[in-house]
Amino acid sequence: EVQLVESGGGLVQAGGSLRLSCRASGFTFGDYAIGWFRQGPGTKREAVACISNFDSSTYYSDSVRGRFTISSDNAENTVYLQMDSLKPEDTAVYSCAALKPPIVTANAAMYDYWGQGTQVRYPT
Image 1 (cartoon, rainbow, N blue to C red):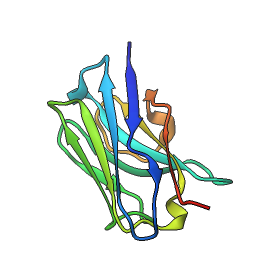
Image 2: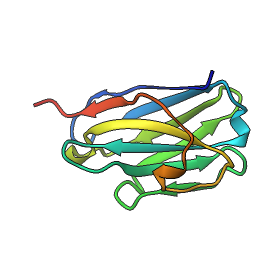
Image 3: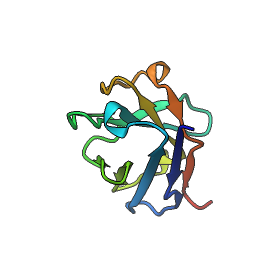
Image 4: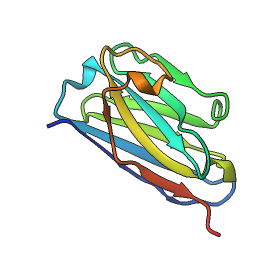
């Protein structure tokens, strides 16, 4: 059974940091690319960052480039999203998704498997 399980979300402060994890199981990790997507209140789903587990190529959206870093640990079947200099507009549910072949793309429709998501939010 294919599973993608996100963790690491929570409350943040302006300028703070979080590291999200996406642990994969049930498929050959190196044959896939993993993307992080987010959907905030009243917004469309947005691709945040993607990484190919084949050649480590990456994609970042303009809104997070320079603040977020995606990385992959093939031995642990886990992809990380390090989020620094967080802003209120980063509040969203963050989901990871897997795509075969392992090409880097922001097109959510191309991804085969999705996790349930983890919430990142500012305290009200």
